[in-house]
Each structure stands twice: as structure tokens, then as C-alpha cells.
Image 1: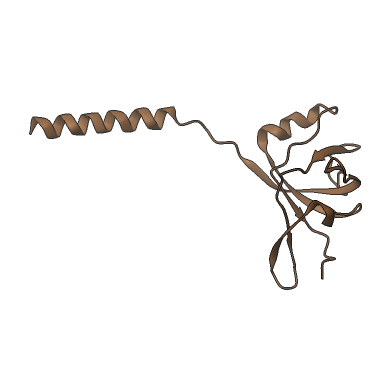
Image 2: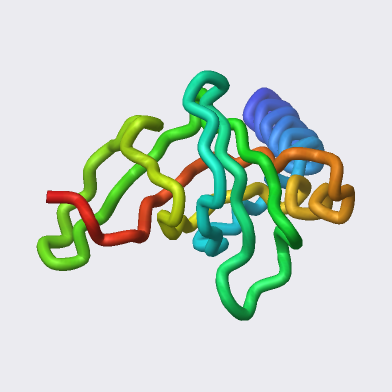
Length: 126
């Protein structure tokens, strides 16, 4: 009986320590609209600006697309497919996935934006 009580006490203590030590996860903001204004194929970067009615990126922000997943959803069929950087074009509308702490960095106009996901919104794929 004493063993079971001791084991239960140790298990409860470990559970409490684990729960208290868990760091709060960052929240990703999905669906932040932007338009490509420039594309640098050599460095795999794009320059984006706000869509109408938005004021997040100001005159424009640089995004490093190397290693960032790019997806496309055909609105007609619902099919989702992965894209490559070369598939993006100036004038394309995007939805960006950005973690909350990186959104706070947007107040510094000199910094580039770190994104976790890019979705091509422009319906032009065959």
C-alpha cells in the first residue's frame, strides 16, 4: 500500500512539474494577404506590399522564400499542390503564414519578414 501511495505521489509530482514547465507555443497567423511587387530569382526573395485595405507591410517588405513551403489551392477543384519559387510572378496575390512574434517585428521597416508558409491565391494554374 505504501509503495502504491509513493508511486502515485511521484507520478503526480512529475506531472505537475511537466505541466508547469511547458512553454507557451507561438501562435501562427494564417491568411495575411500580400501582393508580390518584385522577385529576385537568384536570392529566392520577393518584395511584397499590402493588398487594398491592409496596412501591415507599408511600402513593401522583403521575404526570403528559401526553404519556405509554397502551396496552391485550385478554387474550382479544391486540389492543393506544392509549388516552387519559380512558379511565383510579380502581381500574384498571396496569403502568408507568420508567427505572432515576427508580426511584432514589422514595426522595424528595415527588417525582412520571416514567413512559415506561402499560399498562392491568384487563380492562374492549369
